[in-house]
Image (cartoon, rainbow, N blue to C red; front, top):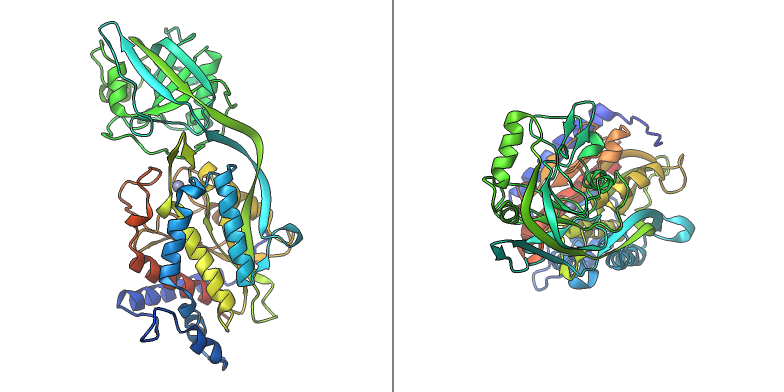
Amino acid sequence: MISCRPFEYISSRFLTWSRICLLALLLGAGFTVPRTADSQEPRATAVTEHTEQPSSSIMRAALGLPFIEREAMRQAIYELASPEFAGRLTGADGYALAARYAAERFRAAGLVPGGPEGSFLQPFTVEANEVTGPMELRIEHDEWSGAPYRFGRDYVARGFTGTGRVDNAGVVFVGYGLVDAERGWNDYAGVNAQGKVALMFMGTPPGTSGWGEKSRPRFKASVAAERGVAGILFIDDPGATALSPIVSVYHGQEGEHQEQMPLLSIRNTIADDLLHGTSHTAVSLRRRIADTGSPFPLELTTRVTMEAGAQYTAAATTWNVVGWVEGSDPSVSDEYVIVGGHLDHVGQQAGVVYPGAQDNASGSVMIMAMAEAMARSPFKPRRSVCFVLFAGEELFLLGSEYFASHPPGGASTPIFQQFVVAADRLYGGFDLESQEPTPARPGASDHSAFVNAGVPTVYFHSSGAPGRAHTAADVPQNIDYDAFYRTTLVVYLTLFQMADQQ
Ligand SMILES: [Zn+2]
């Protein structure tokens, strides 16, 4: 457990928020960092020559800003989002490469290593599943035989897909794939699912609640396996016109891994193809279940050939990347402000790479740029600042939870005062969010573990990103680098102020 000193919680929070607003106003009003007239290089030399300690905290903070370089950040986002890093899937080679890249930047900047034995890498283990292919999906009906659907455009694999092939199997529609004796709900009632492909919605029926782990895809796969189901086709959003994004790679780890069961997410229109010969569509079935408040299983007359290939590892080693800048005031330098963002993304599937430029190459690069700026700046804040790049955010926040329960230096050493996440999808501008303690949930981010431990947090992220998250279209070209640069300046000043305040 984290030990947390309250540290003037209310008043400091108020102070911090008012400062953030002021800083945001300054930057929104076109406040820019001075640059030399004849060069794109920041005025780093001028700053290092400025040895006199400015009396105001904001001036000490501002003198770190010239070390933040817009073009270098842009290049780093392009690099992390490049195919070389293969979508940075936790537990896969692409993430390991990204972690080494970040650790090297921390080392080169002169940060203090936060991992064991002088390393910047904090290891822990995760379940890993890399979707390698081959992939196939085809539908047949007595009246017609469908061409193969296209992987990545028409369907994707669930993160926890097993490796398996199903040839020309019958199909059952099983609602949400839920069975709960207590509430009298059985999506499999009256259908024979043995050896067949199950077609089901993600999530839980509208108007119902409290399904807990039963709503998770892998738990649904366990329920299906008990009924002899050979493969599952998930419909993510029956109203969607495009293939829904990979919601999250693992999106709920509850339930046993079904190593031989292919699990695919399909485009809404494929669900309608599967319902050929009935009077139903995916939308009408969803509405019917919602309106009647009861399951509506169906045996279908179409047949499916499907295949998925994946490499599963029950315990793969992965790493958070951790380093800090020592505070300048010995009376408080054993207190830490943590600033973090997640380095991982959803990886690649059978050659289709998910670059994750906004989510979260942007936040990762921001963390690295701020670490370097603070390390190079002649002025440090009074408290220490711990920079963390988390693994496993896309696996349900595993890295930040591990970090929060295994702080560097042992459970009693660092005292977390405040935690800033430069988090998801910084495509231009930012929103601020504070969060009440909640369990990990889809859409939450890495500050959750700290919020739940009672640590004050500030969460920077861009909302309203145009529907590209967790798709192959989350590419670096979509980021507004001027806005991203200004956001980084705001976050740096905020961070410095948090760590420097009396
Ligand atoms: Zn994400």
